[in-house]
Image 1: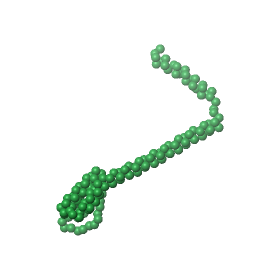
Image 2: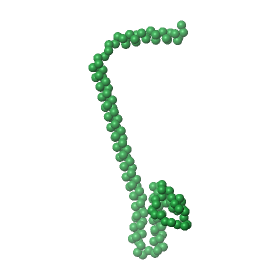
Image 3: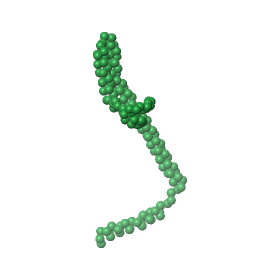
Image 4: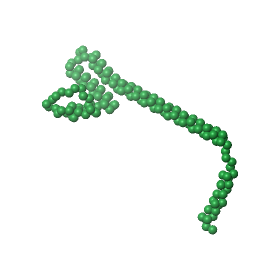
Length: 154
């Protein structure tokens, strides 16, 4: 006999045994079935509650981390701007005996320092003059008619 025939025969012989065991098994008591289903339902309910609680914990943790990162960012910006504030205060305190050229030089240095600090945080100066007005990028403060500039432009 071929190997295929031999492997099919034991399966065919086992099939009646499985049918016999299914027939010989007594039906389970309905009360026991109900209790088993209730227990399974309770397990699923508890698992669901744990999953909901875990999701809420993850949400709260993420919110705390966002708030913490926001606070760190604010502190970092404030630290960078303090140097410019110090320069302005120094310029004001030494303005009494300074010449106009020295004051101008100090203001320009302070402006460069402030712009450099802002650049570190992605803030950069833009000059949209003459560009078409884009409400996504520009904020209209007022409108003035002009012969030298096209309508709806900055």
